[in-house]
Length: 59
Image 1 (cartoon, rainbow, N blue to C red):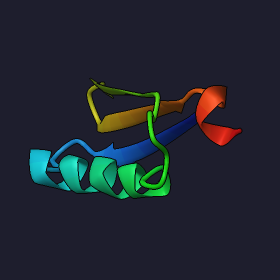
Image 2: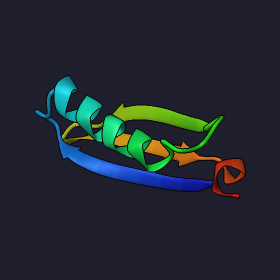
Image 3: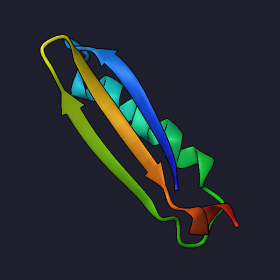
Image 4: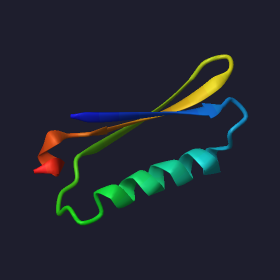
């Protein structure tokens, strides 16, 4: 599994987070059955988008 974690300012909009997720989907666009997991977390100062791409996609 490959994990990408992108840090955004706490004031980042949901649209900004959605745009990042959409751009990550383009990475695996050619796969027949992409296995991707997304998670959004936050703390007092930042929001994080975590993207997990399972190894099956990379073969």
